[in-house]
Length: 279
Image 1: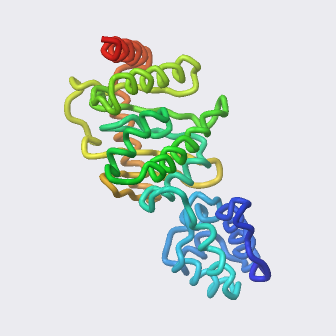
Image 2: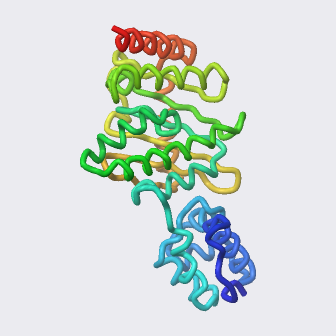
């Protein structure tokens, strides 16, 4: 029974906790749907807990211990699995992001975190917390740069970003920072590591005007959509909701410039920012 030991926090606690949940559920002879009914959640939510793509909250840990007869195992270990270096509203999405096979996102007012340079990320973090100590800002920048390491793999996850022209025109950190940031995206595109499309101003109104959308797909868990606003964010796993935002994303890709035209625009804008800096 998993109640006999604690998880090692240094060994991906969420993944280990999910593996223990799967073991305890199967030992109890329950399907994901049957266990979900007892927790008042969907079977897909249980699958995401087992795959480590969703964080186990304390109230679910308590119910799991009761239903599966695991004493207080999940309650004792869910705290270790919940620790995160990311802001509370984004922590679950950031950790799920690392397990994806494909990410499709729309960014309205800033370059997406996975495509940011350290200087751009620093300017963004400072704008979020104008009175924070430098050490706090550098910790945030380091966390963001750590997320970008998922692009070190040459093929996965697939990253497809639609970036609003407003994010490229907003001078964040100065002309030099913007030149470097846009050239960085162009370099990733030329390496065929990411797909990026620019949604131009003349595309007009669209269904994602009020915020950012991130769709995430996984090998062994249902897809998720993360919706983010100012200081807030929520992760949705309802199939109808995910399908709705997938349709919105497809609409955006149809309205945006092609990847080839987007690359040309990014490189021209990077040169313009560089010339502005020299001037």
